[in-house]
Length: 106
Image (cartoon, rainbow, N blue to C red):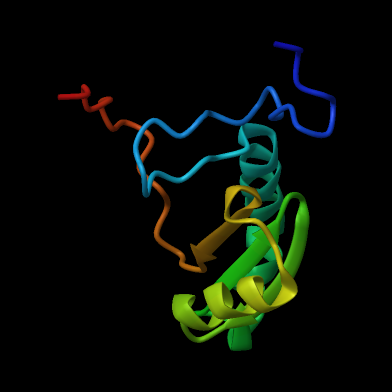
């Protein structure tokens, strides 16, 4: 057997699927999208029209805002953005808790 070609190899940052239906996440893209959201959040909170909205990021780029998460997921599908590379977040003034304990896998 020969080694997979570069076009067939999975990116190192992606976890292989262990069970059907599991989402493969590109950690570099996920981290970039979350960092972009955190970077943009102060600006988003200043704009009244952006409050109580959802925002879609692909890697480090803000793609769109919408009233529902479903609307953004449909847009991502329409644009052909891989699920493993997008983040959809809710714009809110409530901070994300930082003191949560990690939940062990069962």
